[in-house]
Length: 450
Image 1 (cartoon, rainbow, N blue to C red):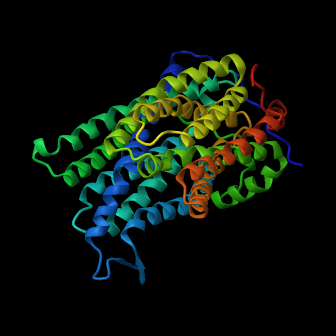
Image 2: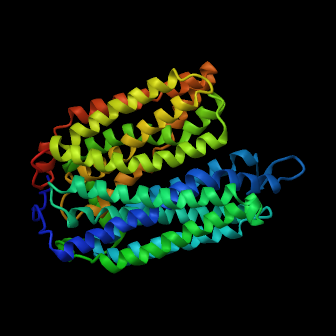
Image 3: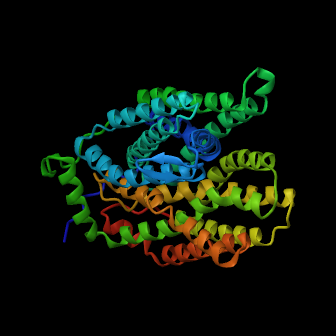
């Protein structure tokens, strides 16, 4: 059985240098969140679909590598391809980061590459759907790899009793940045005609400025963060591939950490599916207009700021595990309420979106900090690589359940409520996990409240 590394100091002193570094860490959440909000969630999917529609052949389909693809499926396939490649790249990125200790260089390299690819989406027009696909795949892989390295700083910046608060603040910074730029982007698109722009030109400007925002604020982040000495460097394999293989073998010595990853896989898949398919439910089942959806997306970003900070404070009082379990109960309530929403009920939809905003950021921020307690010292980036795979690599399960339920029942209401199973299963798995024992098994010092 592998011996767990000795735990590091439980609480780094919050001196001026540490506070400065923490602010730099928060700023990367501010920098990268615009990629999720403006690019992936709001603008790129519909825009790339329209570009693909302009490029169809006489049969109304796209010729790609000898295949004939309907333009409406193009973005889904591109997104899926980027996720599959992330599953291959993310664990190796973590292994290289932990082996070399050059986290600043890796974070900067991936973030700048992703930002450049995102900025390059400005040139996707006139049927250049393949260019859009390549640029997005590069950007999304870079986004995931940079996120793995970014997450791995958390144990270095906060002791066990501080991580929930620090993680929640970072998530709140991200929502502020995402909401601010998204508001500007929505104003630009809605006022495109008065500015002498077409809607397509306005969207291209939005995509490019999201890339510029990501890259510019990453520079600020890198000016604040610093690398740490590599722990037990003499015992590490020489290559990233060997390091990854060694870590995968060693993970069997920490079954409770793997247990948490399994629970996170379940409930986070439910979270991501609700976020990605709520617009489909609102338009197809509730008959709501696009303007309502746009307003709801922006409201969720704003409310989530308070939600992340508020749940972070609750975790300081009651422990992260209890607060996450409470948030999962709220998610179940959201789905049951969505099942009974009346058609065209705008006020009810906004109320439900507000609840989602309150629990969304806190669920993810506290899951991130709780997992940091379960990682053996010196393996942070590698384990967060697998954490991100749990986040991204299985994100097809919820949509599959949604799609199959709709196919069998013909009802979006039954489809949305079918997602309850992910939250219930995740709740049961997390509730049964002995977290304090898991922290000790990883060789770490448990926080006062879990």
